[in-house]
Image (cartoon, rainbow, N blue to C red; front, side):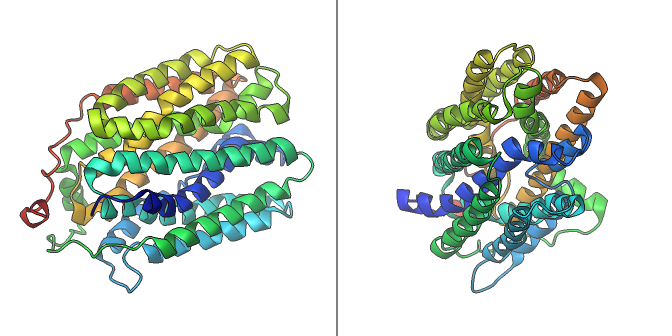
Length: 405
């Protein structure tokens, strides 16, 4: 690993830009698209999520395999080819297919994308020194937010009259972004030395994972973060339409307010996290984020919603940008892919669980306000758990050979 240049950040961020377009589709557009097929809120909550409930279970296995894989392309790049099925799925959605095809695409696409993204994200700790990871991930997330804003603008202008353009943009962004990253970012050699063989006895394996006590607490904390944010986001635009009376095509302005403020805050959040402490900054921002979402459940106008969500975007930027860099400082480098996959599995389960559960609450109560209230509670719980995590010294998880480099 090393300090990287701005050009490296651009090449690495190309794939994240494609992911940003994909994720914004799920956050802003998928709910309306699935509702047009007459699906209930509980089904929309499950399907309108950019991470796969099923595929998340495979992330630890894919991460463990990538840690041990040796190919001319590297350890992570072969898994990034799994981005191809989601691209084909979005091309299929351009034709407005039968509902069973739509459901299949919404299930299988995020499954493959999640596996590709897990390997892509591990390139960050593979290539970048710990003290620069916050800054790099801040720039990386900024690319995603900027690309997501592009999709919002396109959807605002063309969704009702030429929806196929939105699906095409997602497919092209994923394909081009991953191609640039796979070609331009060279993986470093794998770490020297070997770890003891990973036990395949479930109890022994679980004990081995839980030995990283602070990492385990951290993963639980961010599980509730992703329950909250994953449960709320798919319903934001419909909240604006159904609860605040905002015309459907104008509801995209709500997410645009979040995205612009988050974009403006992403790079400063990463830079500050590297300098004053990732956990210290995240704790305060996470508390603010949870309280803002909780209060936002009682909004009554479009103007109030835009202001509240813009402020929420600033608070959201900090834990979103610093989440993965902070995790990489809690686990050993040689098991980075495996343990990153395990954490991603748990966090990815949190997103659809939150969206499905919050959707069922909306069906039961007849209002989408309950979604924001429940999301705020989950985020405050995440804040309380994060306060118990103790961050180690930067070299604590390195072997003597690695620490001396």
